[in-house]
Length: 223
Image (cartoon, rainbow, N blue to C red; front, side, top):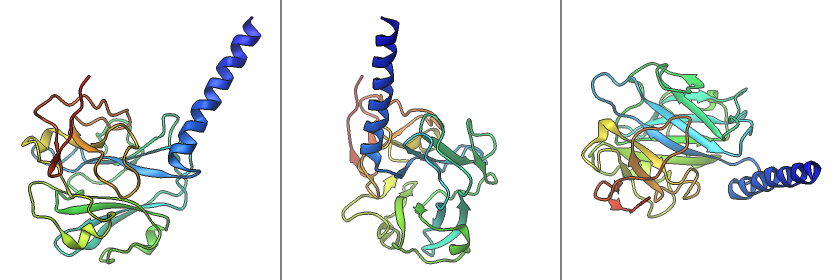
């Protein structure tokens, strides 16, 4: 009986792994959550990736683009890092829970700006590099009640909206999060919602009715 139970459990684990692999592809990772704005001196900024647990991030780079020029202002080479056992990786300020790689406080600009994930090296993106679609894996174009940036929006699939972190009027208290984790697909922003930040943890997707604004559209999540 114990042997049979163990076999069933093992099949369940492999089935779950297969579902994740099919959902994300063999080596797919997505930008899953971003928090660019906090009260006072920004010290809780982060970018979270999500995908198949344990996947290596070697050969990838996260790039920050400035909306005032549509040029890069920071790049973070992910060689040697992997997604954790729950499928998360966090790049952020040192005080962010579960952070894996850090950058200085007040680095991630509030928008209109963009975060992009490329299959490339950090050396391919010295500061001042123009946006490119070559080897682009995923991107988020966002703002804090700013006008859309047509140049940066080229990083997204056609008709995908720029996400307003202040769309609910509480931009310093929320993050921009895919709901559920990994939803929407690469270079798509329609699955993002605004909710309390959850770095290195699952997005709860239980935004109260009346506070569902993301980007410039509304979606609805209920318990």
